[in-house]
Image (tube, rainbow, N blue to C red):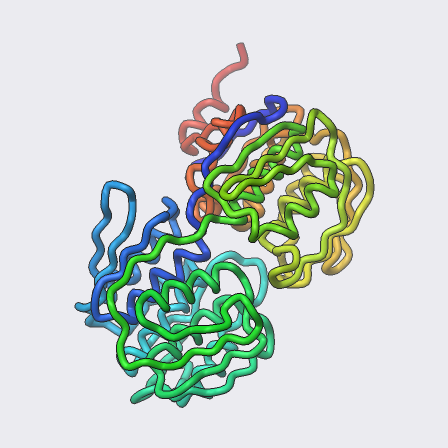
Length: 431
């Protein structure tokens, strides 16, 4: 198992290209199951979750071609399986997104209950309840969601909780349903809107995406299409925070400033100078230590839970004492214990972290517990007084495209080392 070794190297300075959004590409890949034809998707990030999704869809019978620009063409005309097995689903909760497309196109689906990061309860009951309202017969047996429906019927669905994957699954299922489906209390995230745009390119009739009410008029068939995925707003935010905590200057290219308002607002509050263009964002701390900022996570367009860990780290080295309140996932403070090992002054009280900043942290061996926590620890290494070794970095490979290469481009001292090489180095006598 690989490790990352990060050594503080002063302020970051430079430009970095932002990859396509993992959380947009995954449901778009799943949507290829809806069409008896080809879906070409560009701006694909090179991530483990993408590989897992391609493997899962491939097992269902989807065929893939990848061109020289890393665009993926998915052809679901030969799908011959309706069962998504536990072996592939267990590592990625987004795998549940094959349920709606398989059921609405083939009338049947068997999908293992999913796995993924252990950051809290993300139940699939919202998906199941919505599909049942559309006429599906669903049972949970032997760890699988087993669903059948001759043809789904349009329905008015009011989501009990705002759920991104729930909204996406029901939206995809409704594209081929008989009649009109309305999803109320729908997720408003940009990734939901991007999926809706892709579905419409395939001939679906989806309106209202980006608001809390989405309407889908069912059609009998979808057709081949091409779609370019949006940029990754969380990757963008992560590199901007990297610039902020190191008191440096970072320019993110090929990104969209209009979908990062909450994050940019908090960075400005922290003392960063922010400049934006049509497809770029530049942060400049001008050598100054950031100011601590209060954070309260909530569904889009509020502050994203996927940026909470990075801002806990920012506050840990900022000037002041603040609170960070996590309202989305109940177990999403597991990075706090690792930051405390590095000397961070953080007190936990339920879903609230009270953070008092210090000028820097101490180097220590730490362990990544989930995707965003691993990014937080990589950034923590940038402001530590001695090298930081991060274990279990397979989490980071699920959501960050070549993070060590991109941070190195900005001047960071970061390297990936295989565990056996690291262990051998530790045994060498000191010079």
